Length: 74
Image (cartoon, rainbow, N blue to C red; front, side, top):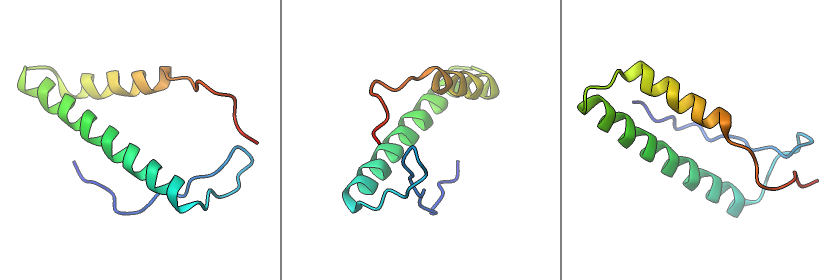
C-alpha cells in the first residue's frame, strides 16, 4: 500500500481552513495511526485466508457507520 506524502488541508464546517499547526499535527498523527492499524488488520486477514476485497469493503462499511460524538464547532 502506498502512503501519500501530500498533506490533507483540513477545513471547518463552514469551509474555513484549519491553520493551527498543532491541530494539523494531531490530525496527521491520528490518520497515520489509523492507516497503520488498518494495514495490520488487512495483512492479518489475508494471512488467515480472507478475501482482501471483502475486508476492504468491511473497513469502508465500518468507517461509514462512524458518527461524531460532539456537535460541530462553529
